[in-house]
Amino acid sequence: MKELVEKGQLDTLKQYYEDLQGYEQVPWDYIYKTIYLHACLKKQHAIVDWLLELYKSFDEITAIALRQLFPYGRYLLNRGTTTRSS
Image 1 (cartoon, rainbow, N blue to C red):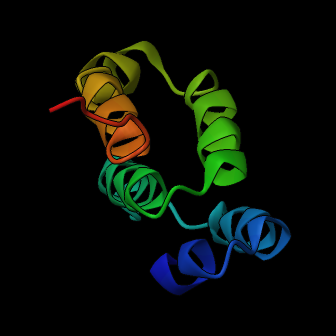
Image 2 (cartoon, rainbow, N blue to C red):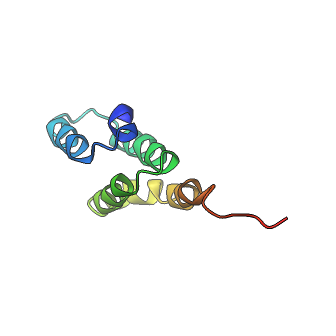
């Protein structure tokens, strides 16, 4: 999935996610965290937006557990986009 993020292939990533929905033992919280942070690091805004929409569909316990990712993700997205005055 990281390769799909790096290439910005949102449609393929969505399809892959749909294909994996039948598996119950997949650690979705871990996968979400990893892919979300990787998308933020690689500045893949469209993928980040999709993942934020996907977050709304999680159960309450999972949502609470993942909530701390978002400030760090925003930091990664914005890192390097602001210029510093010396």
